[in-house]
Length: 280
Length: 301
Image 1 (cartoon, rainbow over the protein chains, first blue to last red):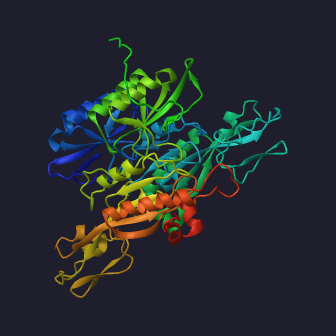
Image 2: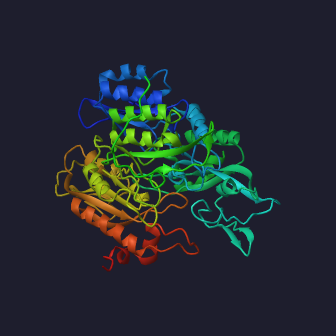
Image 3: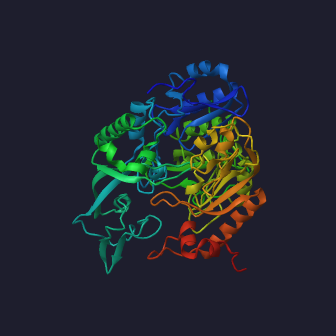
C-alpha cells in the first residue's frame, strides 16, 4: 500500500480555507488516557496555534481546530517527547481505544493491551478505515460490537466449597449481578449459565470467596461498523491469553491488508463473504 | 506554593448523591478514592484551554495525574482522594465543569464538532438546548442522545436511544448532465441514484446523505431542503440495536418536541425487564414491546 498524495495523518480540512484541524493521539503511557503533562501540552498548543478550544472525539483523541497549515511542523515538534503524535485519518489504523482501567466491571483491565496494540500497529496503512476497540466487560462502553475488530474480556466464574454467607450482595442492586444471572432461592446459590455474560463482577463483591474467577479470556468480534451503514460485528474467535490476543490481532490486520482491495473496510468483506479470509 | 484552605459559598450537592461520582471502595496508598466523571456545563462538545488547565491542576493535585476520555465527551478523573473530593469539585465547578453523565439518567449529549466542513446543518445549538433541558434528568434506565451533522454519523446516532442526523433532499430538476457522466452514481453508497435521459433519477433507497451533490462537478444536483432524520430506540453494549426512523426532514423545533415526547413517554411507559426486579427497560425495549407509533403517542396526562 502506498501513501495517497497529500494524505497527512491526523490533519483534517476545517470549514475555513486555510485552517485545518489537528487530531492528536496519545501513545505513552496509554492510548485511552492523557497525563496531566500531555493535557498541559495540548492546552498550550490550542492557545498558541488554535482558537483556544479542543474537541474530544469518540475515539479518545483530541482535536484542535483552526490551525494554520504552515504551523503544522512546528506543532508536531512540540508533541515530540510527550508521548503524543498526530492522530490518524483516512486509511491509517485508528487510535486503539479501551474502556477505563478503574471500572468496577472490568473482567480484565484492557488499557495496557490497547496501548501495546497502538504502539505495534499505529501507522499501518490498510485497505480501508479500521477501528480496534477493547472492552473490559460485556457492556462494551467503547462499542466493541460496532468496530472492525472488537475485543471483549471474559471472566469464567466458578463456585468454590467456601461456605456462602447468604449476604445476597451478588444478587441485590446496586452491586449485584447486572443481568440477573445469580439467584439465591431457598438459600441455594445458583448461576444461570445462559444469562451470565462472564464479567466476573460477582467475584469482586463475594467476601467469603464462594464465587471466584476460574479463568479469563478474550472474545474477538469482527466486521462491525458505525457511520452511514452501521453493522453489528460477528463473533470471530476466543483467545486465552493477552499474548495470543496481540498475535491474533496482528494476524487479522496482516490478512486484511493482503486480501482487501483499496476502499474495502473489513466490515464490507465480512458482510459479503464472512470471516473465512481471516483464517489465512 | 502552599495553598490555603479556600472558602467558597457555592451551592454544592452533597457527596454520595452526585451523579458522576463513581464510587469505588478501594484504597490506594491507604486512602479511599473515588472516580469523577465530568462534563462541561452548559453543554459544549469542546473544552476551552482554561478548562483543560483546571483539569490538569485537579488531576495533579487530587488525582493520579491521568484523565480518561470517555466515548461521550466526558473527561473521567480517576482516583480522586475522598478527602479532597469537595475541593476538587469546587475547582471544577468554577471552570464550568460538572460531575455528571452517569447512572440511570440522560447522559451527556453528543454532537459532532462545529468545524467539520461535511456538516449539512449545524447541530451544536440543538444539542445545547437538549442538554439544558434534559441532561442528567432521572430516567428509568440510561438514555443517550446523539446528534450528527451529516450521514457519516461519527457520533453514532443509530446506536443511541434518540439519534438525530442532519439530511438533505436532492433536487434533480436539471437536464444538462454531460453524456456518460456517472460521478454521482459512483459516489452513492446505496445505489439510489441512476442516470435517466439527460438527467438523473433517485429511487427509494436514498437516505438523503447528499454524497451525490458533493460528487457532482457540473453543478447539476442541488440541495432542495435540509432537515433532521430522527431515529428512536437504538442501543449499543451487550446487545446492539439500530434505531427505527421516526421522522425525516424534521425542523429544529420539531426535533426538540420529538425528544421531549419520547422522554416523557419513556418515563411513563417503562417497566421492569422480564424476570428482573431491579432493572428497567431501555428505551429501545419499550419501543419493541409497544411499537414505535404507540410508544410515541402522548402519554395520558
